[in-house]
Amino acid sequence: MIHQYQNNGYNIVLDVNSGAVHVVDEVTYEVIPLFEEHTKEEIVSKLSERFPVADIEESYDEVKELKDNGDLFTPDTYEEYMTDFMKKRPTVVKALCLHIAHDCNLACRYCFAEEGEYHGRRALMSFEVGKAALDFLVANSGNRRNLEVDFFGGEPTLNFQVVKDLVKYGRELEKTHDKNFRFTLTTNGVLVDDEIMEFANKEMGNVVMSLDGRKETNDRMRPFRGGQGSYDKIVPKFQKFADSRNQNNYYVRGTFTRNNLDFSEDVLHMADLGFKQISVEPVVAQPEDSYALREEDLPKLFEEYDKLAAEMVKRKGTDKDFNFFHFMIDLEGGPCVAKRLSGCGSGTEYLAVTPWGDLYPCHQFVGNEDFLLGNVTEGIKRTDIVDEFKCCNVYAKEKCQKCFAKFYCSGGCAANSYNFHGNINDAYDLGCELQRKRIECAIMIKAAEALGDNN
Image 1: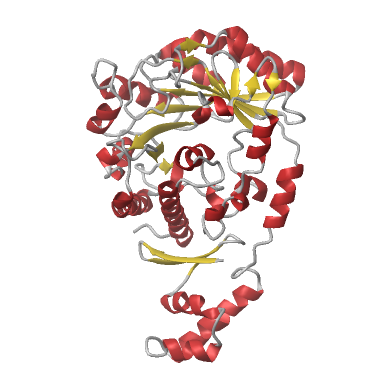
Image 2: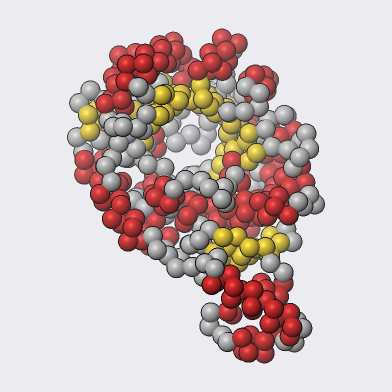
């Protein structure tokens, strides 16, 4: 499978199955789509009015050499491997999302967790439940040594003493079970102070700080319950937090909606505030929500991604450069093919834990009793659900079969697929469109870096 596109002045050709990326001239860009179904003479005839014959013939020979070397038109050899692998692989749990607090001190308008309640009741996780969760993780992790625990909410700093106690307990488990915990914290910043920063900088491998961008953007969607904006309170704290972590091992994480289709301005605003690690995600909302993204918004959103990518190329190597999560792509290494095709591991390797210890496939399924897997004290009871998630990969999804992005997006989010289609093996269509665009931009940035361009 070949995917060709033009972006910011580059003619880019992606050989999907091998992962090879080629930046080509205009002649070669026109030869490639004709190559497999036409002879050399036919291609020369079709293109000779636009290009010199010698150039066409040279391009044809170069394309043929790339194909012979396995860098173009390579076959997909992974379907049979993945089907067999997914069915037979032993399932071990490697990560937990601990819902430390089903409560929040903000009232974000797009919150899928309903101000932290998750379709249920407000609650704080006790140390006993959290301790049982860590014990469950260790007991179900098999030979895997490196384990991950995200302190999530709601707002986890509402229950920060339990966070500290669980980290301490986790460090004890490391010694007795030869495990290594990587803890992370997701926070809205309202309660962040020097004590929390100091603890997080010592114990948290990553911190996610929630901010939507410009003051008007953030305060419209992330107010306090009384309606007051949160921007002025949290931005100085986040700036101090990011600097205290040497601008590494954190993300300022925002959400854009139909209210700010010019979201690149919000990303650049955060970059200009001094943040170096930025992630801004499209909102996932039902069509009846006024802030939901719509199909007619796609051209504008594509334009914004292109604009952002071009600006990042300009800023590369300057004191104003930054990383944008959705444009970070590894063309030479990255996850193994099984991981690339099976995704985040929700429902199998990654589980969410409620304040009372119930287990769900991920945080976005919490509260949906159809996906209640079990409890940290009793273990997983619904192995049928685990088996369903175990077989969730791009080859189980019809929409992924001919998509060039399948090795990068891994089939998309199972929760989004379920929420829009009632099936974890479908795909959230608008999200797919945005994902494809982001991947195109990410590859373009890599091309610019490889060529040393800084336009």
